[in-house]
Length: 263
Image (cartoon, rainbow, N blue to C red):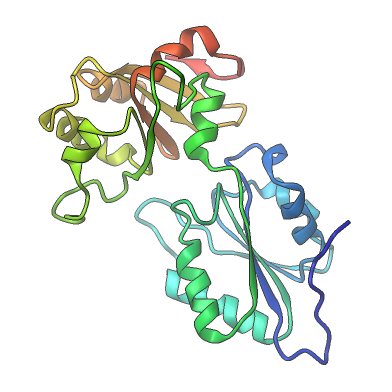
């Protein structure tokens, strides 16, 4: 049974649901996420959220596309925050539909802070993050007894020490067994070079998984020593997830998602 919070004309403020839409396959959204969409009066959605999910929204719901692509943000984050507050203050049930999980590199935390500061009630509906789903659909478990007892999720979008000096590359290279980079395709060469420079063996297996969980998923594999060349030859494009670690070796044995193209 749904426990959606309803609003009415006596309530001066609506509510915002920060909903994770999953990594691409529309079947991976949660039951709670579907409940929220079915009760929505406004849906503010991202580029990476599968548009098929919008069919769950009522026929009269207002649909607002605020999608971003790499280096192109037609609707700035500050404007999205303002939009959420304005729609909720008008007494509307608002679903902020994001790809993956809203609190895993989805800027959901920033939006939640904006809602708190504006006094707007909200609920976070976790989603399946591509950080785990992409490797899983490529036949790569991010942890495995005997191979990997730890995993780290890292943003690759600012994988540049000058832009993000807080990134401890030494700890990443020497610490977690499995490294999963999101939004790192354009910085792939910098990522692998920096990991090698800080001690990660050049022979460490790497997989780059494009358009994860969709029918056109592609996986390019190699090592830190050659993945940049291999990805270039494959014309890898975002969205893609980069997996670094010994668990990548399990792909040949565990690959189950057959629609994808192997490279």
